[in-house]
Image (cartoon, rainbow, N blue to C red; front, side, top):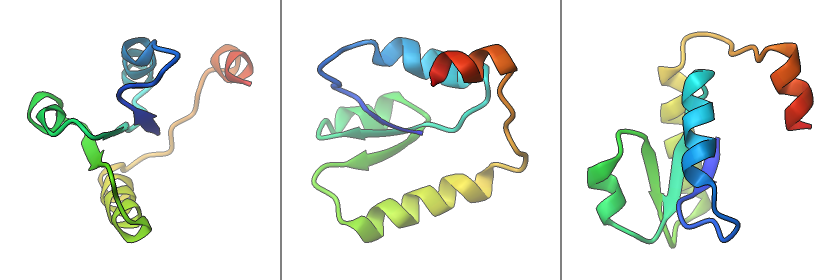
Length: 79
């Protein structure tokens, strides 16, 4: 999941928490270089090139060893 750290609508903490509950890998997108030191998640620092996005997501994907299946209720609520 790609998540902008300073999402205008807010609620990024809740989204990150829920992703963690379901074991969904999270990549933060931010201009804030301090975030790299705070979180253990992958981070894409703005501005970034598409090849950097591909590289980071490939790294995250290779670290995930299983298919993540959401409970039916959560999947329906997300849509």
